[in-house]
Length: 188
Ligand SMILES: Cc1cc2nc3c(=O)[nH]c(=O)nc-3n(C[C@H](O)[C@H](O)[C@H](O)COP(=O)(O)OP(=O)(O)OC[C@H]3O[C@@H](n4cnc5c(N)ncnc54)[C@H](O)[C@@H]3O)c2cc1C
Image (tube, rainbow, N blue to C red; front, side):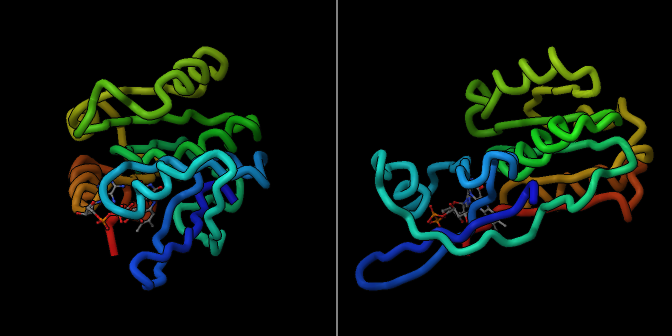
């Protein structure tokens, strides 16, 4: 399913644990699974530093920010940082399915705005898929006032409190609550 997640398993100082990472690639790439990992602590650094041919056992995939059928309404995606991961999977899948409603991606990368994940992917997609619109921004909330949010189904994915803050902002600007989903990337 587009937007599913996996749980890589880790072992550190004799302790076993697992963390969750969203799949950034379309299900059509299966069995290849692409992850988009922000380097913030031990686990994310471990994944980034895996050598070619290295092994990371994973549980999953599990359902979280998924779509299980072609949507019927235009889609608005609002993402920050590695929150792009499940959304990239969804957008690539919608493109493959020739989804004919508009798809808007509002993307920010607050910590390193000059290094927007997948910038070239979005440029190329926008050239080849008229329904797709991509906006780079530092503050996603600043773009929302120029859109009629009630006509969209909206998925939000960001780190920690930012998902909730963006969700509050879209609801305050006229989005329909039943059409809004949000996922928060937090450490646990
Ligand atoms: C449903 C879900 C899906 C997730 N998918 C992804 C994913 O696709 N890519 C990804 O990089 N992370 C993702 N995460 C976060 C991931 O599970 C880990 O929590 C993260 O990698 C931090 O683990 P760590 O051991 O490296 O650092 P920790 O020492 O556990 O955390 C260090 C600090 O980093 C913050 N933090 C956690 N995740 C992020 C992040 N992504 N960006 C910036 N700061 C962060 C934490 O709040 C904490 O303050 C997801 C979390 C959830 C709940």
